[in-house]
Image (cartoon, rainbow, N blue to C red; front, top):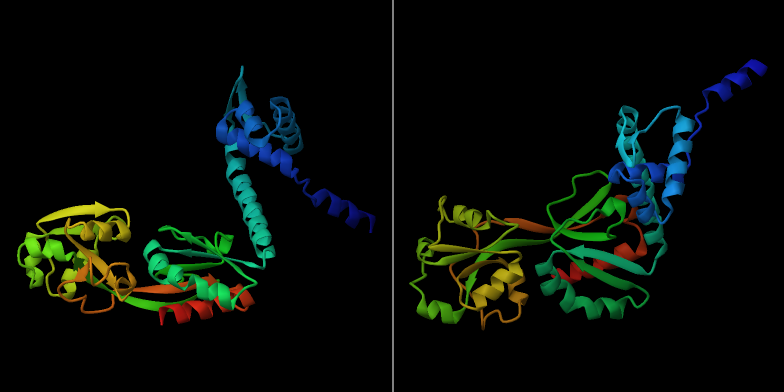
Length: 305
């Protein structure tokens, strides 16, 4: 029995403290005790002592010191990656727990055009039907990291690619060319898809192949315009179309809810012959049953109907 206890103690790992690991990670990343101290709100002396204690605990030198400069040793380089991964895991888990504690807050990450045409026009109805919830919409073209609680819900193109995520199609969209009536009255004829070679095509940086896909749906594999302008978002391209700078490729049926549609901007030609993209509702699979998730999903289904 005594031997078993001794064996158990001998196999135990003396895990370093979290502050010492944070000091090491920050110093290793900045290669400066002074900058690590400033970032962590501690003194350079405290950082130095924490790392010396860590080295003593590990029985290995993590840094090569030369005067006031430091470099990672071989052991330090081997240790840094796992430490950063562990700290990131702790940070993500902490963020998720803190955000889930805010039961009355629903964080939705959505693309800008979907936000302006679907979410904002229906926001008052969500608030009226769900007075206990505070809906917070983050408009971004970047995908939110649902698993690490960047948002409770994301509205994105493409379905979930993980068993840990739930995905439900909300809305299918097709490319629809649009332009301003003033532009069309002065520009070359635009009756057929091939006429676009005489027009400036307005592009969105994050969808560089959108016009190509539209052309393919009309049996034009090498669709080319007479000129090209590139914008950061579809909203920028639509503003340019309203200003008479060319022809933009909008998303039907969302474009029908766009301010000025049918007046300052109108459809031209035909939409894409097949569905090109789908907006999907995405959330963490384990949280699908939560009341605030279910209520938001119900609202979104109604909003896109």
